[in-house]
Amino acid sequence: MIKRLIIALILLAIVIVAGSLGYMAIEGWGILDSFYMTIITIASVGYMEVNPLSPNGRVFTIFLIIFGMGVLLFGISTFTAFLVEGELSEILRRRKMEKMIAGLKEHYIVCGMGRIGRHIIDELHKTRRLCVAIDKNEEACRRLAEEERLFIKGDATSSAVLKSANITHAKGVFCSLPTDAENLLLVLTARGINPLLKIVARAEEDESEEKMRRAGADGVVLPEFIGGLRMTSAMVRPEAVTFLDKMLKDQEEVYRVEDIFVDADSVFAGKTLKTSGLMERKGFSVVAVRKGDRYIFNPSGDERIETGDAVILIGESESIREVKAVKG
Image 1 (spheres, rainbow, N blue to C red):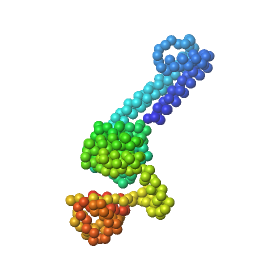
Image 2: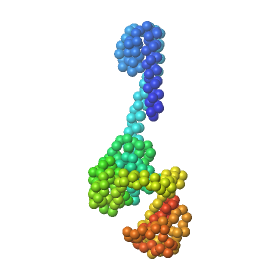
Image 3: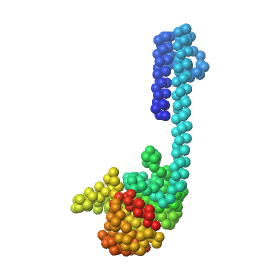
Image 4: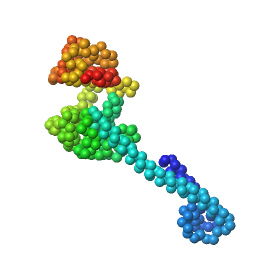
């Protein structure tokens, strides 16, 4: 559509220039009179001629009206279609997206599309998890639209906006807004709407961590603290860091550390790791079992899995996802 609009403008400019030059050559008029005559001719406004036209000038005017009106109508229709179709397509796209969001369940809501929020969205998509982004920045929303991702433009701390993201059926919320105050308010608002929701928040200040946990956050991440540990690890244990980077950044295969929570209905409850089949499955390995606050690393096949335990796996995301799909 934009290409057609540009073509229409170029054609219109050519007609105006050609008309002005034609009157200057045929009638010997000045540039202003020639330009004025060209404009009123192709616009068909019905004003009187600037000066009496010669026979050749009248013939030229006939052709100018025919071609000029054609180009003008083409330009007007193209511009009108550009406005109407653009607005219409945006309305239809928005309604379709709202319908898709309303039908989501067990999805994640990412609030704030800064650098951290972008990484969260990319990771969720890479591991095939449903998610909705919320941001009030025009540029951030435009980028999400270009990537055909689900998003809502608005204030993430607003109850109405969170409800439009179907927070009542969401699995978790990521609070990655620019300031600790905004993230604290978001935690309070989200927890008030959905008490069962899992909430992970970003904090810049150390003192904000405890406040966010009291407000209802299940986890709080301090980027500067994590960054410091990451830099130290890159220096003192480079091979381990290289391994993790390879696992997280590989574009061809997705490897991750995942967990399976064992509830009362789980097919793994009451079984040992060996009899559960987790030790024999291909595509991942069992690296630990959490029992309460205690972790059993590199567990044996005789380790029994009880209700409330969590099994920590490392391997292909697709293989782990298949296990999670049949766990209960």
